[in-house]
Image (cartoon, rainbow, N blue to C red):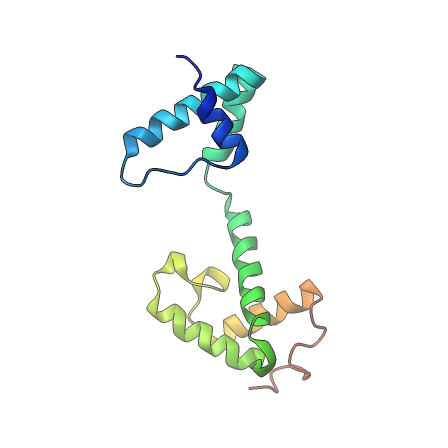
Length: 141
């Protein structure tokens, strides 16, 4: 299969735009890109690169990303930041309406207290705030 050098140039320069609704064209472009990589680094390395990209993330990486998203969401509240307890309540309420895979917090919990304790641990561990509510224990309920 000949290498489409223009396609490779577009990918490298970031100009390649996907064609929505045309899975066959996307498949051809992916194959062309794969063979361009093969030409550059060899068959074995190209396979390793594509296999690493095509696998789903391990569960521990997914959990870490979800935890980082939860901390970021809490910190993005701005000047009218709610207490950790109030924020955990909002997350618990939202989780009840979401499919399990889309939920935030430990194992997609819908428990206000579980999410509160999880978020307190994350904030303490991240070092963003030694005491996020300026209080100790559960006294901020």
